[in-house]
Image (cartoon, rainbow, N blue to C red; front, side, top):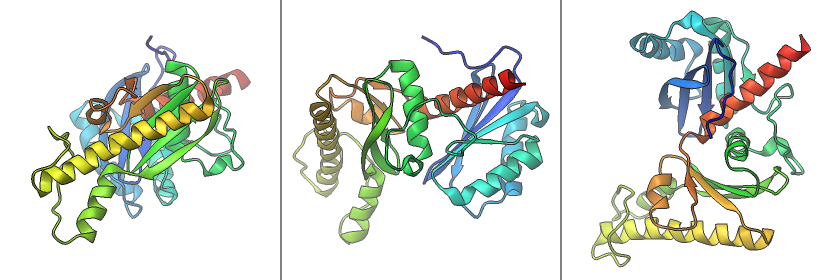
Length: 273
């Protein structure tokens, strides 16, 4: 079922998701995504540089700067936050809602000793997945790291697992072994490689399938309950083809979570006034 997070006639929202590798900017109107673009994450990039890049793309898509009345930011790279806040305030006249700050209600209980240590993207994913799929979840995110996040039967975030990302592992393999080339991540036809490239592809692809299946099954055993596995991130469709353990592939999970959390906080603010 399609979730509705905005009131009709709501001004446009700019949602920003800062990952370790890429930063995604997405524009929403009446909870419908109008555009999405990404740029390499760089803490040295200034607010002015962000805007020069964004302004060109916005004009190509007929998005007016003055139509943006709200911004929401999730970042796993804290050093980028100052410039993104400056971008929001100086160019869009909006005080941004920042995931993880005290004034932001994410709408999900984080049952961990130090909840502030949980990556913003992980709790955002958990919030969106809980709304769409219900409780008892494993959320598998293929990013710079491969993460497994767990939502229990009461709808609380209780922790997870962090492993090296697929591309990070490939880069490390290439750097550490002089004779091993850079390769693309693909599903090989056979497990047994007959040359260096197919052997590496098999090791990465089937090795990560084994990791996915092993971790998910151990989480299910530890929780002693059926759990739905949601996969997100760019490589999720590729790896979902190699295993039955993934129940759903949801590429829009993070951005949908940002929109939902913004709407939740905006609605609360209206009630207070």
